[in-house]
Image 1 (cartoon, rainbow, N blue to C red):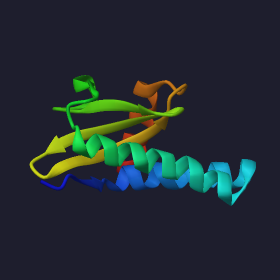
Image 2 (image 1 turned 90 degrees about the vertical axis):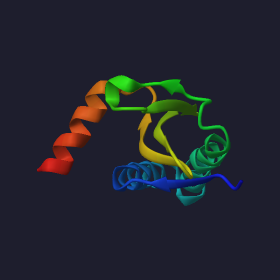
Image 3 (image 1 turned 45 degrees about the horizontal axis):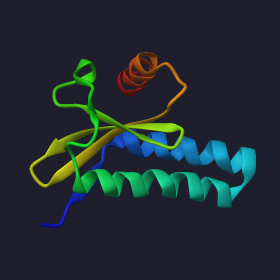
Image 4 (image 1 turned 180 degrees about the vertical axis):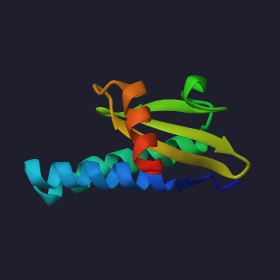
Length: 106
């Protein structure tokens, strides 16, 4: 069975923000490497959806898995995984979720 993943709108936004940050700080090549590394980890997780750690306090069946300096939040579903968020690992994770929810509503 081929493992698949899909990116929630919030995860797409997170990855764009990561790319924008690294493009400004270090250039397009670095931004592409950082985002590419996250996507490589996403592909790996899609083959092993139970590999992460439960993060149920962020939602039903939510799991998390590190990717370098970032934390990937995802939820398994019948055909693979859905990436919900990608946050900088040193960031206060609960605050990042709250901030993101406010942005979606407002």
